[in-house]
Every structure is written in structure tokens, then in C-alpha cells.
Image (cartoon, rainbow, N blue to C red; front, side):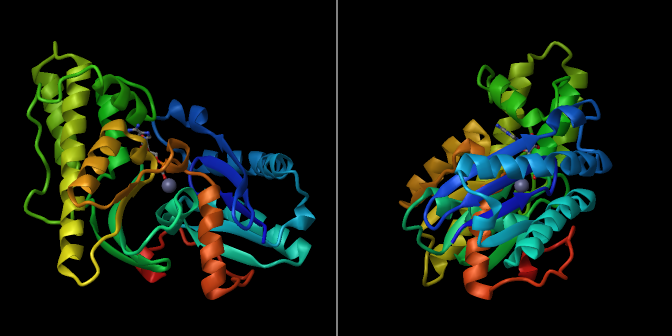
Length: 335
Ligand code: KG4
Ligand code: ZN
């Protein structure tokens, strides 16, 4: 079965083609530059860019896979969560192809796709596994009992991890998106230079990053001579310490159940972070379980993960009606 998947939930227009056992193509067109001057994603602008790009991106994905659209057996699009103006473009496009070609359509949950993307990169993934999903819009700690069965244990009560990176980068005077820039500068800094708060120590699974952001703001105000590298390293240490502590609590929870975690994985844009990747591997080693670390290209939004989730979804639940709409706010627990 060949699946053509489309992802347009935020600021990446992406299409991918998945064959029975291998990814045939994955194309991502980023709009980052258009949003950079606004310091964040502007929904209407994102929608307009998706409309401009979608047909070319799909065409490119078909060319790279060396197949024509009539060879596709299943069309998939991200239904949510995400920006309404952006989601509409990809879902409508995937449904239109399905309708025109007389083939089935599947609407995919964006976070389920991040969680299941490990199935494409790693063989013989065993369940349950714990996943830390950290992006610009979300921070979640999830137990994946099996494909389609998810327990969201907690997450952030305010800013998402990526959002915190982006906001702190703005405070320091770096560009957008801030995550990769802070990651790079932190390599040259001292993580112990400033003692920043580790948020919500008493809550096992939830975290909060707005207080940490305020602490960085005060730090900059009170130490105008502070090296950017040291601020970045200290901020990053606080974020990652907090995320790892909450992830560890999820592993502990599972170890008390009859079926302990078989592996640990990370996903979402912040999973590209070098220090978080290093600490995740350390934590998995501590529990003697597999660390399923995605390739950096699989961390940020892409359509290959949408295709994998569509494959699982189609096997389990069959096709969706072409009448289904987008779901900008779609809790994972509703699946
Ligand atoms: O998953 P994603 O591509 O888009 C959504 O938010 O859905 O994640 C983007 C976020 C941005 O906030 C960006 O700053 C952050 O991921 N990010 C990183 C790194 N690369 C991207 N944060 C920390 N370190 C990185 N290396
Ligand atoms: Zn995402």
C-alpha cells in the first residue's frame, strides 16, 4: 500500500509517500523566514503560504518517489491540533485527492504522529514506551501502551518548552526560532553560571516555564555584562533538568505496574536539542531500556510521521469519511 500524507498544522508545508515498508519520499517546505520578523507564526500568513506551496510540495514528493498520483492507495492529512487556517489547507487537499482518485482518506492527529514516528526509524519497537513530546506548541509526557492507546500523564501548565526557548531567545536578542540558537550558544557556556529555578518540583508530571522565563528576564536586567553563552547554558540546564525529572517519574510509574517501559523516546522540535538528547540516552541507560532518539529531521514537523500514523490508523479503524472536519483543539485523550 502506498500512502500520500500531507502536513500543514503550523508553518511547514510537507508531503511524504510511504510504501509498505519504506519511506519513498519526504518533502518539507518551511515558511520560517516569513514569520521570523514577527517573532512567531502568524496564522493567516501560514494559511496563505500553505495554499501557495501545497501543490508543488505534493508534486515534488511524487517525483522523488518516482510515482504518479494514481498509484496512491490512501491519502492522509493532519486534522489537528494546530492552526485552523493552516490545517484547512492540508486536510482539504488530501480529501480532494482522495475524492478525485476514488481512494480512501484518513485524518491524522498531529501528536499521535509525533509519538508513532519512532516506528518508522526503529525496528521491533516494544510497548509500552514513554514519550516526551516537546514542541513549540506542546509539552507532554505520554505512556504509549500500544498504537492508538495513549495516557497523557502531564505537561506544561503554561508555556510549552519550545515557546520558552523562543521567548528567552528574544530576551537575549537572538533570532527566531530560538531553540537551535540557544542550543548552539549553550555549547560554549557554563550551565552552572546562574542558578535558575527548576519549576514545579513537587508536581510529578506537570511543569511550568513562565517563571523560568521571568527569572531569565531579571537575570539579564541585573547582570548586563553576563555572557549570552552562560545565560543560554544555565537556562537550558533548567529546562532539561525539569523535563528529565518528569520523564523519570513516568518511567517510575510504569515500573510499579506489571508491564514496565520497554523504551524511552522523545519527539517534537525541541527533541532536536543536543543536551536533551544526551540526557534522554542517560536516563534510558539508567533504566536499562532502549532510547529511541529520532533523527533531527524527524523531530520537527514533517509528513513522513503523518503517513506512519495514517498506516496504523487505517489498519485499526479503517478510512474516515470525507465529511470529517479539522480539529484545531483535539486532545490526544479523545482518540
Ligand atoms: O515541532 P516543531 O517543529 O513545531 C511545532 O511547534 O509544532 O517545534 C518547533 C520548536 C520551536 O519552538 C523551536 O525553537 C524548537 O522547536 N527547537 C528547539 C531546537 N530545534 C527546534 N529547541 C531547542 N533546541 C533545539 N535544537
Ligand atoms: Zn509538531
